[in-house]
Structure formats: C-alpha cells, structure tokens
Image (tube, rainbow, N blue to C red; front, top):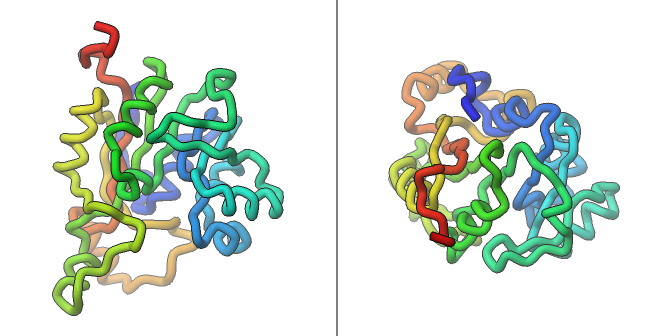
Length: 226
C-alpha cells in the first residue's frame, strides 16, 4: 500500500499514531517490561496511545507478568504471544488487521529471522508492518562510546543499522515502502530539548536515535510452498 512520503513528525510514537489512525492493528511487544505499569500510568506507553486512535487493537507480548499488571489497570486487549515460536493464546486468524506494529522488538530476539518469517505468514497483500529499532550510529550512542564504555540495554542481543535492517527485511521477503530517522517518544511528552541541538539533529537525521521502517510483502519473493 503506497504511503505519503512527507515527514509528519520527528518522533517515533507520533509517526506510528499518524499511520494507524482508525486502522485495525496487531501490536507485537505491547508491554514495555520492566516499565509497563509506570508508563501506562503516566500515559507514555505506546500501546495505550494506540488504543486511543486505532479502530480495533490487539496486543501481544511474551511477558505474562506485565500483561497481568496492565490488565489490573484496565488494559484488557494484550495477550500472550511468542512471535519466534509462533505460539499465541488468541486466535489471530479470527481477526483482520491493516497494520502490524513491531516496535523495538527485533533487537531483543536471538532469532529475528524466525519472527519475521512468522509475521510474513500472517500477512495479506494489503497489510503493512511498522518496525522500529535503535540506530547504532545515533548521536547518543557515539557520545557514550567516547565518554564511557558501550551503553547497551540489558535485553538487547545485537545492534541495528539502516543497512543491516534493509538486508534482513529483503532476505525475509519484505519490501520497504517508507523509512525515516526519528527521536524516541512523542513531541508532546519529550523532555524540553536544546533548540539549537534539535535543529542540528534534524539537519543530520542519520544521527537520530530510532529507525522506522514500513514494509509490505515483496510479491516477487519465492513462496515456501514453491
């Protein structure tokens, strides 16, 4: 499905919410362990924001404790799902989706190719997938390398870049229809940034912290049945 190439925001959450407004959405990695409760309560949890603009929303996550915590707070549309092992407690075939969101999940997986293969199996020609990952060449990463040892999230198993993600997505049978560098979070909820620094980073987007890919099925990719 073709997308408008204009930049609506330089913030990850705002870009995603603009794309999925009034759409049916499957959100993979809907919790944000160990911060799920805290971010739900302060309004920064992406899944809560998706619930406010999406039409029908189903969330999947592998962390049963976080799912329970969010259900206790009234978020009842997140279910257990393991995208690598292709195991879900909800019948996904009973639902129709316009978008699948995989926000900052890839870098947590030992076998990301398995996950992408399973996502591809649930897609139709009209569906798009939004994938976000950290930028290994961001300003913050480079600054940390200069000032101290490498600073990595304790659950991340590899770094991601635009080039390596493009290669992985192509190898798994996806076509990239939109790409953007951006900040994490949303413009409304982000901390006040130095205006000069913000302008500089916008002029050099390759140093922004997040990579956003919107992909569809590559119809020329050989089917597993052929």
